[in-house]
Amino acid sequence: MSLPGPSVLRVALFSLGFNLFLLAAKLLLSALTGSLALRADAVHTLVDVLASLALILGLKISERKSESFPLGLYKVENLASIAISFLLFLTAYEIFLEAVLDYGQPAFYQGYAILAVAAIIPLPYLFGSYQLRVGRQTGSPSLMADGMQHKADVLSSSLVFLALAAQNIGFPLDRIAAAVISFMIVKEGWSILVDGMRVLLDASVDAKTLEKIRTMILNAPEVARIQELVARNSGRYLFVQANLLFRVSDLKRAHQAGKRIEADIKKELPRVDRVLIHYEPLSRSSLRYAIALSDYWGKLSEHFGESPYFALVDIDLKMKSLVRQEILANPHKDLAKGKGLKIARLLLTHKPDVVVCKESLVGKGPGYAFAEAGVESVQTGAETLEELVSSLMQTSVDTAGSGGTITGNA
Image (cartoon, rainbow, N blue to C red):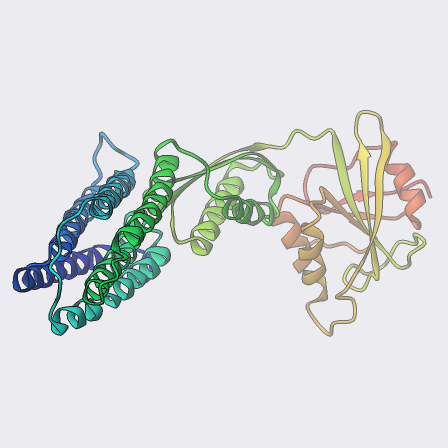
């Protein structure tokens, strides 16, 4: 599955090259100045190099698929991000040791050393920000973890700069700063660790994403109800499983609806790798009727698209009683053309089982739209809503197919 934006692996290789550059620069500066603080920071950068190698390894392994792992090895990325979190803990430990132990730094440093360290400080921040942006675009947890690692590196570089500058004016602040920085890095590492563990333990995706998927499914006119919806992360991908009740009973039409729902979800959420939909026909204990009205008081309309109102009526099939009634205004009645299809789509969002009108919808656009969604459209000879509802509570609708008739009591 391809995702938009830069290649995650390419950015990971950039990260390795960037860390090797920083490592060489810090080792060279520490050799020229004899600064133990710079040497300690170089050790910290060596940890970053190892983290970049772990990131690349995790990305390569996560792309492999085999019969033993039919759902892919995407979670290897999360394992890599957890490994990086422990490397962050190790970094914090190193900085904390530097804060509490006296390394006996030289009394004075050449100006070029301080300037060189100052020049290095913004580089990890800039590159880390780039990694985080790409990581969010692609949903790569390990890339985002590595970006946080680089941004954390700014703190240790700043500590070295403060240590060198303060030493030159006889006012050492490095121990206090190092202690504060080490706790900040631990906090970042803990956040990465928790996120990685949530994925490995199959915790659900965030509520906002889950609600977005739920809304897309319910927008499908064939769907009557969602029985169960589960989504989980695996690496930078999402897996979605839904158990649905469909209004349509035809298996071919239900299969087509399931494929369309899957395509819509993947289009809206490119991180989704797989959508598994299990569906079954709705067992109805009640029916919802959408009835075309010519006025608010219940006179039935002769024309579907021009009807100013529609009644939504729920009838209990077992008790043969009225459960609910609602009057819905037609916002499309004054359109020059296409009003029938537009109101049909609006009615479908209210999930009717049967659409009733004095006009026959057979062979017309709205009739096709209702039939495609598994909604029956029927013609009636009743004159008022009260008369029709009374008839509906006493008789059953012809369910042989679209285009049935309800005569009413007149």
